[in-house]
Every structure is written in C-alpha cells, then in structure tokens.
Length: 348
Image (cartoon, rainbow, N blue to C red; front, side, top):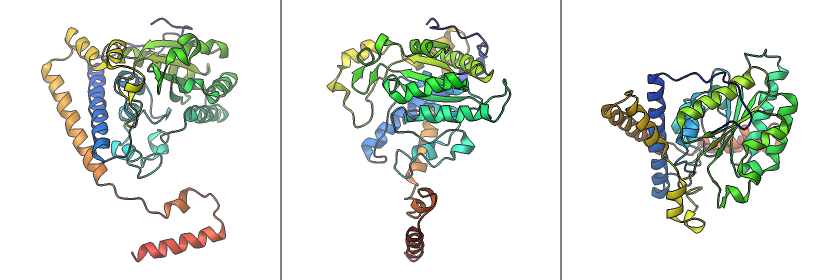
C-alpha cells in the first residue's frame, strides 16, 4: 500500500533467507499458541483470552524490527505475538490470562515489555511519556531508544490517543504509533467509527509521517516498522504505522462475533492468511521446503506443551503482595494488617 506521508527508506533493507525463515517460525509458534489459548479457556485452564487470529504478520513483523537493547514495547491485551517475537517468557506472559498476577509475572524493566494494558488506549500515553523521557535524558539522535505503542482502530477514537499524538509531535518524542486496523472495534466495523477509514491519514494533522501497510505481509510490516523506528531514532519525532489486517475470530473468548457479522462475511473480508502467504513466498523463492514447514510446526507444538505445563504449575500469588506493590506509603494500620497477614500465612 502507498505511503500516506512518505517515510524515508532508511531501515528498509531486504531480509536474508534465514531471517525470512525465522519470521515464518515465529508466526507458526504464535498461531499455534493463540489457537491453544482459546482451547485452554474452554477447558478452564485460563478464565479469559483475547485471540489474534489473522494478526500474526502485523505482530511478528513489527516486533522483529525492534532493537530490544534500547527500544520499549507498550502493549494492549492482544500483543501475545509481539511478546513472543521479542523474547518475553510465555508462561510469565500468560500468567495474566490465568489471573495469577495483574500485568504478567515477567519483569517489564528487564524485558522492555510493559505490563499488559487492559484500558483501551491507555498504553499510548505511557509510551509517549517514556519516549519523552529519552529526549529529556539528552540521549543523542541516532542512539535514541524508541517506544512502540500498539492499539487498534477502535482505540484510535479515544481522546487519550489524540492527546498522546499531539504531545509526541510537539515534543518530537521518539515513539512509533502502531495501529493494527483489524476491521472491528469489538462489534463495530471500522467505517462506522473511524472517519475517512484510515487512522494513518490523521497523522498529517499532527505533522507526523505515516505509512499504511498490508498487515498480512510480515515482510512489508517489518520493513515499514523499521523505517518508522529509524525516523524516530534519528530525533525526527514520532511516526505512525497502520497495518491493515483482519480479526478472523472473536474480540475475546467472551464475545460472539455471530451477533454482528456472518461467517460468510468473515471469510470474504478476511483476506489472505498471513501464514499461507509467507509459506507461498518461501516456496516460490526456494528458501524453504516441506521439511522446514514440518519442523516449524513440530517446534511450535513442543513449545506449546512446555507453556501449558508451566501455566498448570502456577500457584496462587501471596496475598501479602497487595501491601508490597499497591501502596507506596502504607498507613500504620495497613502495616499492622500486613504484619498480621504474614504471620498468619507462615502458620498455615
């Protein structure tokens, strides 16, 4: 798809064969884990989950372009694919879906992957704040860490997103606004809640460059994200990437998409499957053969078994953590309550 505003070509280098194979491996791992998580919810292993079927290329491609030694990810509740692509421990990530701990058991600072954000549009503000901190620290252009914030077409209608984009543009904060336009804001199609049908087009009003990319093409997403990251890293301010894709399943495991669209409409509008598309490319270019695809699937299945076992092994979190993490300065009454709770816990 054509740029809405031209991002320069910096960072859009061609990917080598092994990089293309790795993108496919990641997408297969994400697809298999995503489908398994839905089964886990039905089986009672986890209470809820937000599927991402059809969005594997958008998430893996964008995550693959990041430099996790300096960049920072600010996700929503649907970025399992990004988390997997950047190396977050999947048992620790999925702990949130098991409701063992809010935000995940992984260390956000060490992983550079912020806690899962359930507030629609909330992570956008956090990303801009972190990115602005990079400029306040005096990090020279070219060495800046970039915040990438994920949100959907529905969240783009939130006032928080306008405030974040305006502030980032004024302050030239190194942040990439990554929109996964999957066609639906829960039960409302994009055309009924995004004026003009494009979130990327809004960037012009903030003086930001943007690009609208085929979100089912993992290579195109990786290259577009790399260009946006290079723009922000160079000290030129924020950029917008809008990946046009499609949510092929429910908004969450508590959603019934049959109430607002038919299965025929879903099949007609879904577009080309991201994994099938990449598989065809690898075969056509002679980069992979059937043995490779079988190995990738086998690895994904083995990984899923390990993650499932790890989730099953998770126990309840100590109740005393409420006093350790919720209150910055507990009152004397709370300190006494915490002490009593710890003493009681030791004797149970």
